[in-house]
Amino acid sequence: MDLFKLSTSNSRLKILNLFLTDPNRAYYLHEIAKLTSISAGNIRRELKIMVKSGLFQSYRQGRLVYFIINQDTVLFEAVKTLMKNASVSANEDIYGQALSWVSKPTASSLPKEIYCQTRDIFLARLQSFAERLEIKIGTDAYLVAAVAGEIGNNSFDHNLGNWPDLPGICFASSPNRVVLADRGQGILKTIRNVRPQVKNDARALKVAFTEVVSGRYGEKRGNGLKFVSSVVSDKNWSLRFQSGRALLELSKEKKLKITEMPGIIRGCLAMLKY
Amino acid sequence: MTIKLYKFGDFLISRPAGRDAYLSAKAYLLNKKADAIELDFEKIKVLTPSWLDEFLMMLKKDYPEAEIKYRPSDNPTVISSLKTISQSP
Image 1 (cartoon, rainbow over the protein chains, first blue to last red):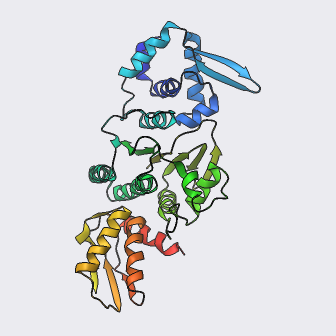
Image 2 (spheres, rainbow over the protein chains, first blue to last red):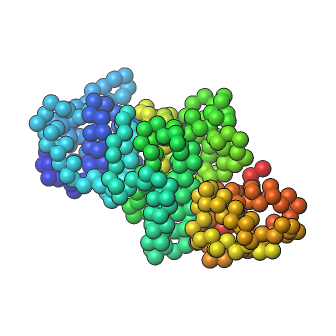
């Protein structure tokens, strides 16, 4: 495999970024598709090349074919180094970067340009982002900012003084998309403050996006994520929102779909495509 | 009585900012008694339901008898926020 071709394939960069997050973990095809937002066909093609080169190995378990990065090949260290330098940066793969950040068991640092330790930093960057975006897409930029504002502020509202490890959020943007993530308590834990009977992450996400309920005990509010859902549907945008093991997808077809994911993340991870 | 919300900024996003804005409005803008209070969204760029909810919740608590009116706006965030707030019980 020509390593120098790595930087020309955005799909390959995303796949490698996912596997390098935890090199001991194997994934099956549709799992990779979900986590990277790349079509299964593209992933199959990229993996075929990388399996052939020896960088990846595949094996069958039941009905599924799993792929795992081969740490014993000399290519592994070379690719790792290349990926560090290959600008899997905020501009190219902000979702992969945020996913990697919330997937790790212990907190790692984020590039300072996408890390907002406090709400003040987040709001200042959000305002600046919205004003730049307005030049490109007009007043819809304000709706993008309002949606991102609700998601980002939710992270601060529910974790202030109670962050499990690293305080603050990831806020990054690239053309037509915004990514927000936090390593907070996640939706299930906050919803259980007021709905102790909620069983799992999937149910907690459903409650958070469809019912007016606030995870902050004693408060009569909780409109934020309903607003997010309503705007995304009205504008024909799409949203991926993951918390714990559950992934909520709101598609352009206005369908709300919640699926159980094989991997767990800390806190929340959201990507808005507008 | 009309409250021009742009006096609190044109990006009205977070709950703490909504709370601060209301406390300031109460101290400097609102009369002790009011039959009707109108919110004017002119010059607002971004409004979220969280900011508005925080502001309205305290306003309604302090002025339970007052009629709260909203001046029409064509800002999409104002329209969407008012729609969301109006749908909550």
